[in-house]
Amino acid sequence: MGLGRSAAVVIGSFPLGESDRVVTFYTRDFGKVRGVAKASRRIRSRFSGALELFTLGELVFFDGGRSELVQVDHFDIVRPFAHLREDLERLGRAAWIVECVSRLTAEHDRHAALYGLLVRSLRALEGPTPPARVAVCFGVRGLDALGHRPRLDACTVCGRAYPFRHAALGAGGLVCEACARSETGLVLISGAAVTAFERLRLARWEEALAAPLGRSEVELGALLDLQMSRLIGQPTRSAKFLRELKRLEPTAGGRP
Image 1 (cartoon, rainbow, N blue to C red):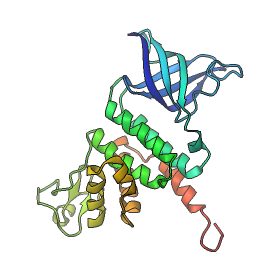
Image 2 (tube, rainbow, N blue to C red; image 1 turned 90 degrees about the vertical axis):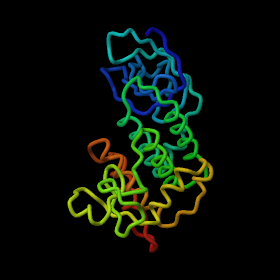
Image 3 (cartoon, rainbow, N blue to C red; image 1 turned 180 degrees about the vertical axis):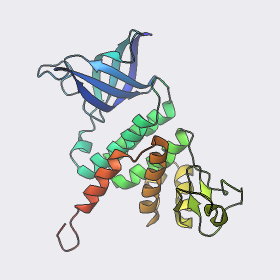
Image 4 (spheres, rainbow, N blue to C red; image 1 turned 135 degrees about the vertical axis):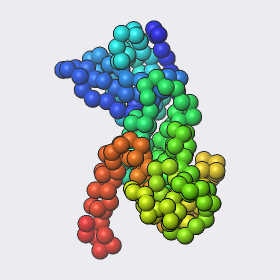
């Protein structure tokens, strides 16, 4: 492939040897790309903090075709999203978003719509919208973009048209009460949550961020994490962090 250049977001990294780092980017033009950033852990590295998680920048790399890892030439910061690393809830929600992108995409599989959704979500997390709402909006659209939108207009087992009482949610979508008796791994979903999901999916991005959802937002957040976990094959790591953060929040009386 040779030299590659694209806008990209850092979605993960880990140390390699004494001074190098393997960095995972989600790029606009090449999808997920993993590369070695030589000497990036040295004090006087030319990368100079550019490879922090969530950073948006312009990536230049060389792909020799002999390894799964490309060679990162340089990464110029466009927007560092530093505020996301300064607030624990924003950090947790952003980590959940990039974890979903990282674990549910294949390398070098270009998906411009998902890249755009990722960047919009990170920008929204730095704004006034509550972080939980941004994550829910990402989850609804992310499932759609990845081709895993749950079917919400009928039972996925028998085809019975929705609405019906005591709806449950399976990996592929809704399951009616009769079919649920013979299915496993289902969770109940309220009619309000079904309506909220469709409202967020069909609304424009800014409208979705501001739409009133009430208690459905919390329910949707849990259901979306469940759907993502089903696709990944194991629970998301970021959700565990968020649950622990919630547990440690002060109560009305001021005690955790």
